[in-house]
Image: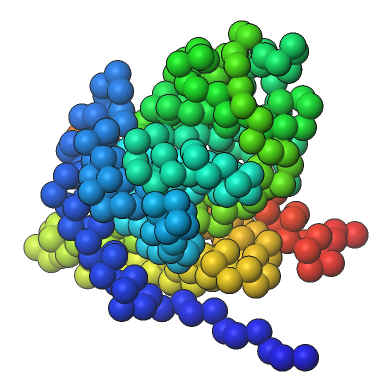
Length: 362
């Protein structure tokens, strides 16, 4: 029996170039002050930034085959993009449209919609609550006389979607134009990734395929690549906290020079390094298909704790300025907290991992 190749946890030259290009764009068009201002508006999504990412750079079609107008890339490249988007808490529907909805459409073989996504003319969103884990129960709407009726809640980025992918009680996944549904924004902790209620009252829908395999595939990819976003969040928070403590002085010396704080930062650095390995392993597993369920569960069992801890440490170590609305650290804390329940909690992924490796609780 041949041994499985070791996952490549370091970025390739091409992936580093992609990272640099995305980071440059976000540096120019997604500064923290701009994200904060947009989060306070009626529409927090940054549509111009999304158009630059999706159309000008072609990132909306990274996972879509070249024959359909996409880039034909792998989950490793998508993970690079999400890591940078996490560093900027960018308010764009990349994870929900270019990853989760795309994976569902790939499972269904919906070539026309995939071509629309690749051309960046359409944003699609899977109408499943952001909290639902891979393999979890998926609420569906009622289908009667060829029309869809019902309500789905907690759907991330639904307010910016053109097409909703809706599970129904007959086991099918249906494409519904957003114009045929009522989408109402709900109160959300994360100001940069709003959630909404989707109401259908006799909406027409086109059956794309079966719900179970499509949604499972989509949510697994979403959970696995969410870890890269959480890595980006944690890495930015650690870097900014180190920078701030090197500049801030107390008793006429940099605060970062105090041994107790050095130890806290060192522990956090180790946690972020561990998350980096887990997140990149999950992306590699999604790309290669090797031990994918285990890699995703490991990444998500670890990612939430690290991202939230990094945000809490950054908030505390920035002192008084970290508690102000004007400083962006609260955006990162809220995104980290919201991400900690997205696509399943860490506890749910630990339970899934225990089943996968046959280490059930007594």
